[in-house]
Amino acid sequence: MAHDDQAHIRADMSDIEWKSRCDLAALYRLAALFGWDDLIFTHISARIAAKDSWVKQADGAYLPSETDHFLINPYGIFFNEMKASDLVKVDISGKMVRDVPVMINPAGFTIHSAIHGALTDAHFVLHLHTDHMTAVSAQKEGLLPLTQNALLLRPQLAYHDYEGVALELEERGRIVADIGQKRILMLRNHGTLTWGTTAAEAFTIMYFLEQACRQQVMALSVGRDGVLEVGQAVQDKVAPLSGGIGFVGALVWPGLMRKLNREAPGYDA
Image (spheres, rainbow, N blue to C red):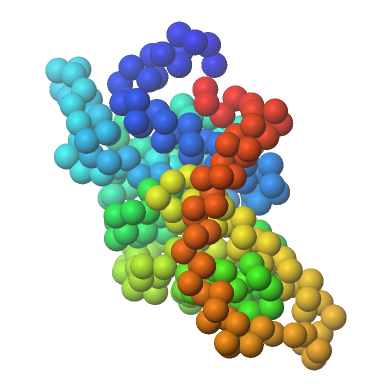
């Protein structure tokens, strides 16, 4: 994108919104870089607080919004080509804040609006369908206490039963009830969801979840018999550390940005 075009797009938004757009576009590129994308069929979103989200008035002026908005991907753009300027801003009812010739994934809106609408700290939400995470979501016992990664995540993990493609807005209440205040939702027979106060936090939680699920699938590939589960006493010992996964994200994020700028630049255009 030419510098003048980017300047025109940025003229009607706050610096905070643009930063959120860049972080969100980075999440899309990172998901693709790590092999977590599913063509165009999953979604990542970011909340924009009312005071930081500007809306065009009838006279052409831009004023702060009265309600929070969130950013989500335009349906049809691959994750490895996502740019900050591509992202679509919608309100909590799913109405686009700016008139743009694109559409959003209706199932993505249902899932993400549920989390953003209920959890005020959920600034970034990732929803993915990787093979390993989806495989574990289809196992009756869910994520087992087999590895350190799993032990660190299980206290933050909730489950939501599959209800079909998430097109019915009434499902949002059940999603919210199931996740409570936890950071991870395993969508049975479907995939996973993580949220964080920052892009780094949401990504890092998802990274450890993918690792834990991949390790579980590999461990169980030789059969259930003989697989060693960690005892409850050690699970309880590790559990208090579960809240620190997001903190680790702040240490990892700068390196992830260096990796992204080397291997998949252009997300911040």
